[in-house]
Amino acid sequence: MLLPRRVSHLRWWIGALLFASTVINYIDRQTLNVLAPFLKTEYRWTNSDFALIVIAFRVSYSVVQFLGGRFVDFVGTRRGLMITVAWYSVMAMVTSLATGLRSFCTFRFLLGAGEAANWPGATKAVSEWFPAPERGIAVALFDSGSAIGGAVAPALVVWLYHVFGTWRPAFLITGTLGFLWLLAWIITYHKPEEHSRITDSERAMILANRAGADEQVARKRALVSQILSYRQAWGCILPKAILDPYWYLVADWFGLFLVSRGFRLEDTAIGFGIPFVGADLGNFVGGGLSSWFIHRGWTVGAARRIIFLICGPLMLLMIPAVYTKQLWLLVAEFFLATLGYAACATVFLTLPSDLFESGSVATVSGLAGMTAGFVTIAATYTIGAVTDKYSFAPILMGASVAPVLAAIVVFALVQNTKNTGNGVVLRI
Image 1 (cartoon, rainbow, N blue to C red):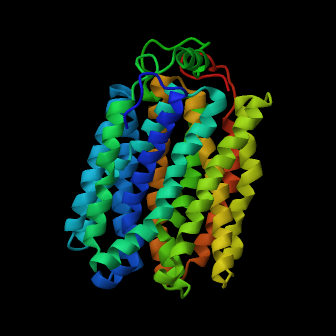
Image 2 (image 1 turned 180 degrees about the horizontal axis):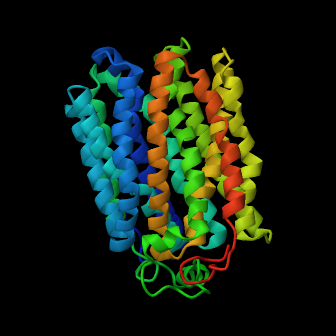
């Protein structure tokens, strides 16, 4: 992606690149989930067997969320995302060599290790390039890539499966997309203060309105133990840990859920992608509404918190989905539920850049991702065991508790305290 010497609104080019990386990340991730019904038949897996593969991904993804976030804070956004995208693209491609349960678990473990730093790295990039009123939209933009990738993957992967008559080329072809992105990233990304193609007016605006620009900045990178001593850090960590399993219930299991209800995957390819479209819309509802409130004079904290009250109740639609038999209505319920989830997800993804100075943003985001990952592992195992023995009904009912708990945590912990303005924690 070659740019002219000076580019107006360069920050949105950066946002577009972050969006593209997330699209590719999710296409690579969803390839296995889309192929799951075919692979289960070929290898005679139970839901518990499939859960082991998902858990293998989650274990490395969870641990490296934190390590990857700390790594990106250490080496910088540009180099950190270069390394992580190259790694997970290679791992996606070599999954085409898998021969059974163990090898699938191994390759998914390695894929998770590569994909883990995408969100901490993208959140850090947003903190470097976007002022507070725009951060919600910027996070919505890059996070919406997960929904777009999830929506594109079913049609693309099922098409590749039928074209080649086997699942292996699907992993190989989708894995190549990351290398195209790397070329654009290497050419385009530098910090605003170092970028040769940014206009002087945009550079001045970004630096003047960057998070914490008017506050004392810590001279040394904050220790993890220091970060964890702040309630604001737990205001970032706990909501993500509570709500992420809700999302992965849809992302990892929706295809198998539809099959369990008697629908053929080939007949529901469009329906399979609709919840991801809902999530995509929800990203911009959450980011756009909170940004609108900030422009109307609300504090950043109030604007972020209110989204949980406005959009969180939509997630309760998992309850009637237990009893719905019509495909169109079932898909509509999941559409609205994931819209509500994604609106709230945009908020908790934005919070690290709202609450912490730039040198700690990826670390806080990574800590949140790691904690959420371990909770999701437990949830994934539970889903496999419960659905093998009973059905998806208890899982959907239990998931509906999540938005209530998340809202309580956000309102309790995302507040200014005596630590606000100390060089690490920012005023919200």
